[in-house]
Image (cartoon, rainbow, N blue to C red):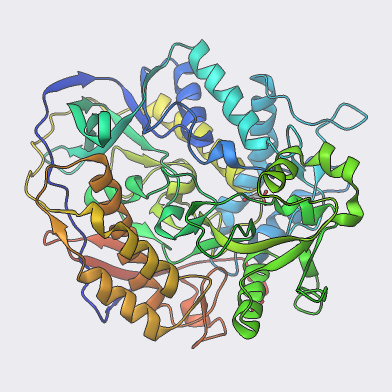
Length: 557
Ligand code: SIN
């Protein structure tokens, strides 16, 4: 294990916490209401625990409902767990934790069966079994889907209904500000606030709990264009870091190769064109109709996602074009309407006809492979604090997540985390008053933070740009204004961008989602996790931790 020196001091902001007006007590707080959070809450309630779900928007309004592809699991007659393990390790480019991958693969079919048992209406084949499709990096058809391309929406509908049926308490439009810590550094609850008109914080509450489960998703919003919804601002990761938890692999942000290109001024959440469209036979072409992925990888358009995105980005850089094209015309209008109704609709909304013209696409920030360091049971480095789903870094996703392994991971980890907390919930403990000093990042800084992160830490990176990004982030204005939800989110975005810049600068190689133009090959000495922890002065300390992986082949486009 060794400490990594960063060129620019890595300092993150603490929130100026408003005082609590009241206290509430529950057994377990779950923050976030995507697949992982909802499944954790449902499983805990089934085990007899009292759960409160805290969610920034409406119940189920996170990233999950936007997921098109589906859930990966070994269900096909020609499939085998070893193949799913191998595909995950190969995509993960040497940074997967193999035992965690094996657990994921082994438990995925049961998690999906539970989802069906809760009423999920999956797409079925002629024999009444879940219909399976293929996505990038998979050697077999193993993606379970629903409503054609509405898989995440069906998962959300199912779990939200199960949650309501069990009478689980839900605090909607409520933000988790900071963890409440006991004198010996355990997490004993959260300071929360209701989001009022204009984003003002109301009803500041100390929500005391015997355990806190973060299921807050990713931080795609740190880039100007992302497939993630507006709430994906990294709040959970920043909160965990401030609570003393270790955070890892933040530089490993996966860019989905095919977000619909809606113009060079596109900002915020962009429509996704699922990889399953390529799984069914669509291909990427340039303006002259030449295949982009031919010769770039043996799996061509179904290469792992990092390779497809890097190949597109290199093509855009070389040609000066601002998008490539996805040609699905040969699949036919009837098939496309039936299999991908949502994508056909979003193309139509953008004035495009997927069945009759190649549609413009471009890579966009999609999924964070890193996060709060946790095992697949959700345990983090801080007792009482758990993390499941995208906010967690369990080693399942490695340096590049295999398509449709994320909702599957969310469900598997949720079930395991709930099992652990049902069996071993710690005794309630007194918490100490959180420090109230701190200066949030000014909301006015948001556009500059996202523009600089996009410019310098996108699909292709180099030391010069990353150094400029780190310096720009270190110089960002702080605000003494009363805290509101915009400041909470911008402070989180600044924290994740700061970690991302620092780690991407330190990792002098290309591996998985992390592509350095000035270090284009993977290097064996970098088969490590970059793990960050905050010290008492707000400085981030970073060390490397070796990964024991299952020797996959590393492929760099
Ligand atoms: C997609 O449908 O292409 C996205 C699936 C995923 O992110 O795993």
